[in-house]
Image (cartoon, rainbow, N blue to C red; front, top):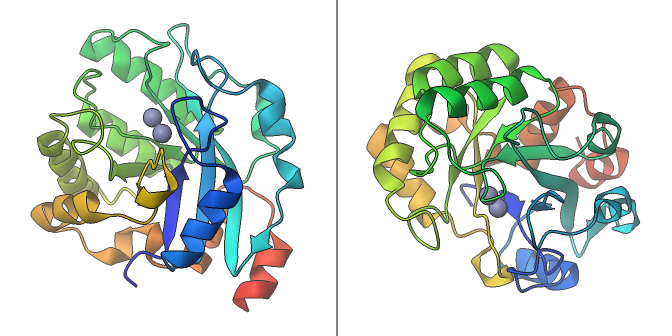
Length: 247
Ligand SMILES: [Zn+2]
Ligand SMILES: [Zn+2]
């Protein structure tokens, strides 16, 4: 399997998503994923879970049915700068995604870029989610250069232009092509809002092919590669996953 890791998924903890964590784990196993990250929306989005959802993710077992479950969040980049969770909450998690959502009304390109650069430089974010969103124009070159310097990954989102954010495709190709030129790490996520979509990277694969990106630059080619990336960003090694993976 080319990409056995899905780093962006939602559960019913976000009301506009439809699967429980158990259904996600089951589907991940059926779809032959070795690892996925559960990344519900940060509390600032209107139908997102309460902060305690993120604090209590530790009750989810590390490995279930031969699937590694990363405890994560898709935080919101806020209008006033920064994210909608404090550092001490983010530090408890295995992976932090961040992106623009409706709780932050779109600004102009200069302001959107400034907000995004701020969170990339904060050191608190591992992956920028759906940077190709047409509603939130950003200076791709400035963002990707900064992400490269800070070791932050840019996401090529497999729901964009398929389930949501219509009109993303061309932007995503631009982002992927610039990631290739600049050497920015790429993360893939299906952004599944129902378990059946987990591991469906069809749109991402189209984007990557058009941009001519090689798999070397993409962390989702193995669970071990994802763990190395996260540990390189300062997250504690997850012993149970290393034991399961034999790494
Ligand atoms: Zn999102
Ligand atoms: Zn999402």
